[in-house]
Length: 472
Image (cartoon, rainbow, N blue to C red; front, side):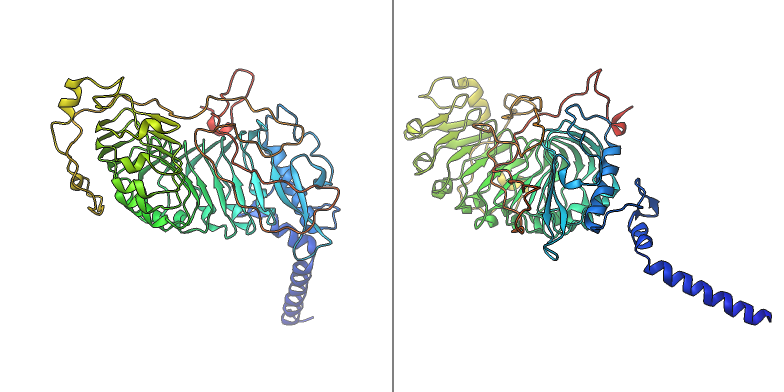
């Protein structure tokens, strides 16, 4: 055979081998089972007909291998190929093929499991909910989460995740409920977070810093909790743009310093407003007295002054008004009639447990210049008359949060129940997209009626190994 003919024959054979390989399902699976060129942890040669459950087996086995502490043996039955019977794993019929099951939910709340999140979890592209509250997972959130186009609820709270805000969370089109509180995330909150179609945002008790994005008012959430972070700058006047949807606004101990923006009074549906433990100065706007849905108002531990308007304490639904540890000089006779109120450590002459006359005189000696903060607030209120000349008594490091509790998981974890009276009011997360009927072998989860209770992450001890990403 001539060399030229031999060359053509070789090319023909190579093309056919390549075409046969591309058509081979095992080859396609092997291509799927890689991320950025790195081989995944589990051999794809499995005898599982349902490709979704096959992916589930691969992902969950890889995850189990990444766990190095499971004190309650929650994953003890993560063996064999029947992933729908794994503890904490929920299977539902797929929307496209109702006769096929898929891994649609993972609920390991209060598991106290230590480990990390492997790239293989990106194979669970039908997931609707992930609940990992109160574990010891660390590291970062894998970029492969971008495959979870149906993810509706993501709860990573009370773990040891670190790094900047996971950008992959901004690429989940079905996400409605985001809870990443009590972790070690840091840096800025991305502007795009407030452009997503979310119902609830919980990012409290992290290490986020910088000023709050100026587009925060564009969000349509019903609840936003930013407490106990290291933000700086003004209380955003743009919050007033959230009047149609916002029910609860929690900004406890966020490092914000400015006058109180009167635009907040536009939040006519707000029931809970907590701006305590900040550096807010000036008067409490009288327009707050027009927020008829308000039930809880807390501005304690700031540097506010002036008069408490009668109409605020006469709001029809107000149950609890806390304004202690400020410099208010004139109260309202209506406030003591409220079911709950606190006004100590102010400059109210007719009330007990107030600041000394000398302390009040020194503080009230200078006028407040709200324009000096350069916050672009509208000037609908009279200019305040006082300014801070000394900071108030320092607030506790973690105000208004419950003490640490040791997780107590059940053999099959269920979404955690809220405490009787949580200090940070919590919303009811929206229900996942209507799933098809649940097969008898795998009961569907019940989304939590409220987010899991706040608790400090369990501290490592001599008998509990640290996460590798945290070891010195």
